[in-house]
Image (cartoon, rainbow, N blue to C red; front, top):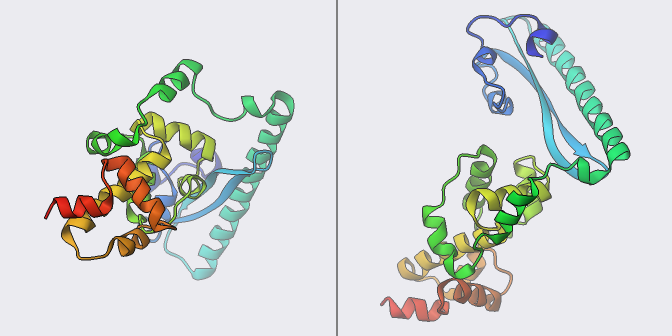
Length: 240
């Protein structure tokens, strides 16, 4: 499609080195370094009120005037809006003709059953995250975002939108790749961070609760005990 729209790509172009699964938006940050111009637009499926991804377009550019670059950027914006409208229109037709269940990406039923049977116990979560691994780029990005924002009250919808997936698909994919549901993983990481703070800092339990985005101290204490088997205060005193 790149060659069909823009002609043959220049030898040595950053675009020629990209495989089909590459996220073009990663090049947008350094577009001048790679000598490309770039535009994107979010994809939203109105029937399920979900942002499911985005359309990206890019083109090689040569050194020229600001006006020439502006014209290329405007052309790419026209392309990306056309592609977005086309994909959204096709999705509406598919949903209208076949229903939402045939449109939303789902795993085969036997895989779904296996996912649902995976251990999701809070008591085993701390051990599970130590050995957990995934090669899925969306889940890696989600985990990096979660781990960098443990001080916030994150929701499934917030994190799934960060990796441009519907909350339904992201929830299934996350559990398939990690063996834990989103909420159990999130709380396990918060508890893991709390354990470090309790042992290595003089912060009060209340301050630690606030620092990890818990709305109430009682909920923090309840969650901590669920994952570790002991209350935060006991965990701190037992280790000293």
